[in-house]
Length: 301
Image (cartoon, rainbow, N blue to C red; front, top):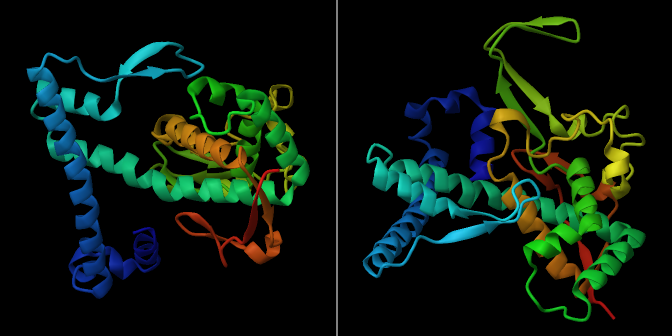
């Protein structure tokens, strides 16, 4: 779907639904969308039926522990349960509305998360000294038990791995650019920009601002240690956008990426086989390597 959407964005005449829907790419877009929606609807209906069964048996709604640093030990409904509860309380919030919200989580996060993990492993594979520090941190947290699941407490303790992930997302943000419509007249670099103008923010280039990140092409996870982050502009680093329209799944994506990276790196070593010039990132909807990423993977001794 990302490739189809990217292709449509390139050609203004394809923005007209009456034209696009008659073309092979438009029909492919429709068919793929139906497959995605069918999957999402099945998940919603299954959970809805499960909630009904739980109510009939007197079981309380499923809750999750929110161990985020800002809201310790608070218990919340799972996201889908929250949406279904809203639907049960107010029928104007329809199952179609729920599907749109669930679509955002189920599909918008797949390509971006995969991209973030791939680029992070690529950079780790280029820097053995960084990989060694990660292995040492993992060993200190997990000890000899390389098979137990990663917990929320583990994620909080993997501070260096968090810095490595942040630095990889700085150099290779999964979404390389975003667009915003101005709500008021403004001036940018001395140029007047009127209200309602669509502006494009190049995250890939923003993250390479030498005033905010000295020697910006260097992979240096220590940039994100607390003592080195002081004084940095809050919008200098925005791999998930920022403000009221930032990525709704930011915390989930970071948690997912840390769990996967910790699981892989507890058992494996990675060596990247291509230079950055050979990989050559392509700035489409998702930042992708032009020729893929080739790595040598071996078990840790």
